[in-house]
Amino acid sequence: MKYTGRFPLISLPPSVFKEAVSEPFENRVINEFRQNGFLAGHVTEGGVWRTQRGNLNLNFGDSKLYGEIDTLAYLPGTDISILIECKVLNDIQDYRSYRNTIAKLTDDSEGFRAKLLKKSKWINQALSEELGVKISSINVLLTDIPLPVINFPADNILFTWYNELFTFLWRFFQEIGYSEPLFSSFKNDISPK
Image (cartoon, rainbow, N blue to C red; front, side):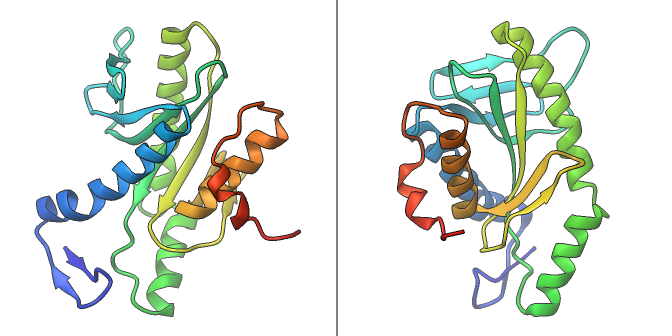
């Protein structure tokens, strides 16, 4: 797998890329949620949510999780979970590759959105059963490079990058009247309307 890092261009075996590049990005996202009072962590293919309070088996009935989840965050006392698929866009080197990557994500030719929605349905049911409250999720395709927020309203998915996500969440929790300040370090990233 080629990794520009962003420069110079080097090739990394997939296991090294995961350990050295993608997992640190996922951990950064998880830690941001944890620092803001969320129960957050990775969900394994076996349906085990690895949170800061320990492991929680989310399996129910005969249903199985499709794949794994990079980041699942839940704010105690709410009915909202945030499901994030982290994407390190290592192959973007110029405008053409940027445009092609955006096209792949928006037309869903690689199934990113379809897979995320399948995971979201499973997580909403699993958390609802576990917590005894009907849970709805905010679904996010998150990149490591600056991109504008792209909303797929029909799919209930946001496609954005790190700072924009937490700026959006800061605004979202302000608008719904959540009393605790969340992601306040990102409030200065909001540009005037």
